[in-house]
Image (cartoon, rainbow, N blue to C red; front, side):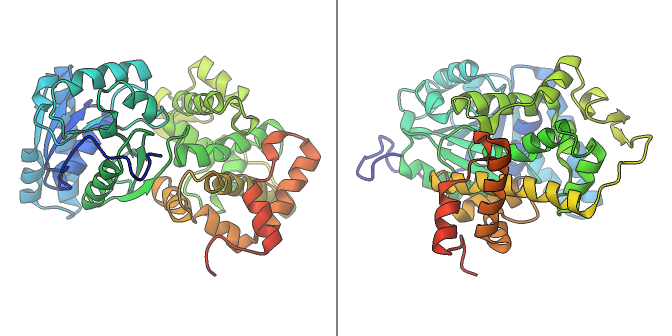
Length: 406
C-alpha cells in the first residue's frame, strides 16, 4: 500500500462526485449508470456502438417501468433518473467528469489503451476507475501518467440490486482517492469493502471453493449434480454451485478460475476443473446457451427426468462440512494475508454473493478447532496442498480465540 507520508499529486479532490462518466453500455455499465443517476449524479454513458446505447436506453425504460409497477419509484423518479443519463459515443464527451468508471471487456491491454486515451481528455482531478473483476488494478494504473488517481470500483451484477461494491486501491493509489471513492459509493446506497489488489480481490477469490470443491466432489462420485445443489441449498445458499455456474456462464466462471489459478503461480487451491473446461469446449455455457450442467428451455431450467440419488445423513453432512470448511479456510487465509478486514470479508460474501452467513462468523459458530480438524482430516486423506489449513485458523485454535467477539 502507499506509504502514510506519501503525498498525492492530486490536490483538493472534492469528496462529492457530481459528474460521472461510464465507459461501456453493456449490462454492467448500464447498471452502474442507473445507480449513479438514481443518486442524482449527472451521468454520461459512453459506447462506440450506437445500437448498444439504444439497447441500454430501452432496457432502462423497462427496468424503471417495472419499478413503478412494484411501487418502488413513481413517475417523477423515473423521469429524474432518465434525465440524469446522457448517451454519448465519443470519449471526448467524458472530459468534464469527476469520476469515470470503465466497464468493458476483461482484457488488460484494451483497458490500458482506453485509460491512456482517457487521461489526456479529463481534468487532473478526475478519478479513473475500472470495474474489472479480476485484473490487476496496479497494472492498469501503470498505463497512466498520474497512477495515483486510478482505483478499482467493482460492482456485482446486477449492479442496481447487489449491495456490495469492492474498492480496490492499486499500489500507486493515493489514500485520498480511496477515501473519496468509499464515501461516494456509500452515498449511492451501496456497502463498500476495501480489498488489497490481489487476484480475485475478495469475492472472486474467497468464492472459488464454492465451485471447485463442488466440482471435485462430483468428479469423485460423492453425489450427482442435482443432489449436490440440493444439499448446498439446505445450508442456506440461495443457489447450488452448479445452478450458479450455469447462471453466471461456464465460460465466464471457468476463465475467472483459470486466471486466478495462473495469477497465484498455479497454487493447487485454485486449480480449474476439467469437467467445466469440457462443457466450455462443447459450448454448453449454461442458461445463455440453453445447456450447461442443466438443460434450459426459454431461459428456464429443466428439472432432471430422474429422481436425484438418495444420500444418507452422514453423506449429506460430509458434503456440507467439506464445502463449508474450504470456504472458511479461504476467508481465513485472506484475513491472514491482510487482503481485507474481517468485517469487510464477511460483508463481501453476504452482500456480494448472498451467502447465508459471513464465513468468519460461521467459523466462530462451528468452532475454530472444528475447522482445523476438518481440514487436517482432508489433508491427511488426500495429501494435496489444496487442503492445507490456514496458519491463522491453526493459531486461533491453539489460542482458543475467535474472529469476532461472541
